[in-house]
Image (cartoon, rainbow over all chains, first blue to last red; front, side, top):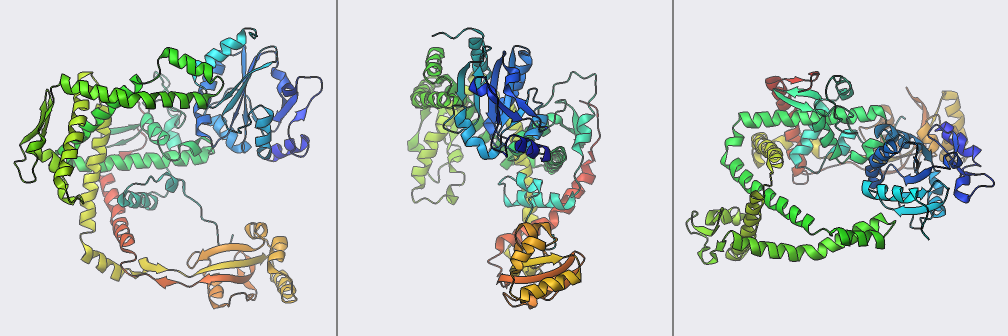
Length: 165
Length: 459
């Protein structure tokens, strides 16, 4: 917890993620990971990225995580899932251990959750919520509610091809 | 913290489902007789390397067929523990617990599975699975289970076909919740019609005939009131528990039972016809039923009648005792000298609560500005309770030394103790009488059947 607090202080007295210059808005964000190390999202730019917002008290979130774990393992290299946990870091770490989560879990300051979700296009403020970026860095899909394997597969294959306008 | 510790929930008590009173007492007895938690983890990690390993799931992370315990000849495997935890009320919280708490929860649940198996073995030994009550209820449950399984199948037939599903996914793209709601709405609209049509078809298929004119309260129990291919309902089947029902029109009730019962029998018959198998569910229910019948008999033996309960209450009146409760303010200092100085400051007009927030060496008290909340007689240190009992509300105590430090106390409010009557605590007497007998009963079963916790070898 101490390291988490230290990281939040580094992020500007808990006011939220760090913004970096000269990148599209969401790629400028950084969040602390479970060890309190600040992780810029930009490090994953260039891959298909799924950012999953979840909380330990949310049963549908916990139910879909094993799908993400299997999906990450099946598409290692082409896909990067990033979890953003909206909860206490200790609890998030326990879930990550229990469900053997094989992708990074970042931590949102719980006081900022509603604003954060809205910033990511989720005005209803509900979790689970998952946002998908294609390899060019464009946000293409914002999915509210739990995801099943079939929908994940269809989104992933859609993201492999250029946007149809 | 010296007094008024906040109540902590034991993991086990969070798991207690709303079972019968006996099951609650059973849980209590488990806490009493098995206070120490078994390290289920130890058994879980000793998986044999050469086994074709299928992990049971996240609650155990052990090979599904890893044997965790043996009760008599019956093995309790990781998959049993996994399923018990996954369907327990603690299933969500489990994920975010630390490793020690998870081990404790696994241990508690394994202990429950062991106890359940012991009770079942005893129920079998005592002949409860051969009783008429068991056979009748199992037959009726099997019919219900088959009918339910057939209805579930019907419900899945009412699910949106591929083209409708594709349309739903397109219309509610990126909104999983709305997709689920649209699917549910589709099923809800289609299912009743499908069900009515299917039941009519089954009625024809199995040639079901009902004879409501044969219904009577005193007719021959063997009288057939509904029949068809593989379906038969007799008058006796409709009269069970009729005298216990509160109704002024028992014949009308039998009529409804005939309608519902023949529908259920038809659905069960159809389930058998399409090869639906409910043996697994039936076996689980049989375990549960036999155990319930045994425990009901034990309960009758341990709590025979009102006279026995009254006698027990007379011998143990403390079961109806409501202790005095105090709402307490407190500051704790390290030395008598410090406490005397603070006492002088309070006498000079400063607030005990402000000073506690600043100076108390008790972290809870400091955090809560000396407001320790409510606690009841018997929970705290006796020397503190003695002082509280002798003080007037609002008064500040003189310095009191305990092993925790030097206290200054005040009572904000109090609720005096009282004694409840037998009628007030009737249910509690029953529970206490059961709780008194249960630990020895369980220990006896453990000796009789044998419990081994380190079998180690997968089945």
